[in-house]
Figure 1: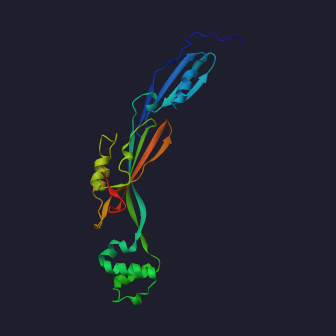
Figure 2: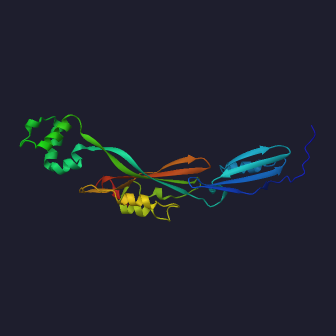
Figure 3: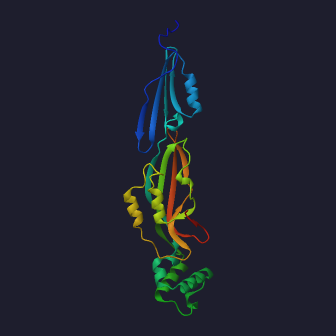
Length: 257
């Protein structure tokens, strides 16, 4: 077979860089290289050591290498993207904490109902006798209906970043309780997010009705530890959730700083 005659340069030649932008994934940068002969292995090894994806088509006549990355791996300023969600969990709470029960049955009687249900006591043992509504509550407790289901608001934020990214606001105030005003201040801070929480969602948070206050409990948002997932294009998704509830700030949790 005759030897290939090379008329171009043996040195790698970088072709025009192509940059794509997606509001969910950020930058996707494509860098093509060409050379005469099979002379792009050195660049391929360099990209591989940087964990940059590439495709190499090499022949004795001409070689083409196309690298794709999100920016940070190639020394290009990283671009983050933000996604906001307001979700609904379903949780279980004690029937004795239901707002209607709290309003209709005095706390001393609720304590008696709780102790009697644990001890398996019959209603006839109560002195004085239970009122009509308290009797219905006790009947539910004796039948095993000790809890009721209700919804719980959750704010979820996902940041999509290069895998070279550094510190993130998700790393601070973990397992602390935010008031609604503190949460809004954090999620609308343009220094922390490329796309802060939109006004429609802020309005929704501001209009959630708070329950009756309880001593040593704060109606607020518990910031959970973030989860991080690698995705295509050398990206990482950082997801943080804030759960709304009356949290024990006397013993179990602390207020956000």
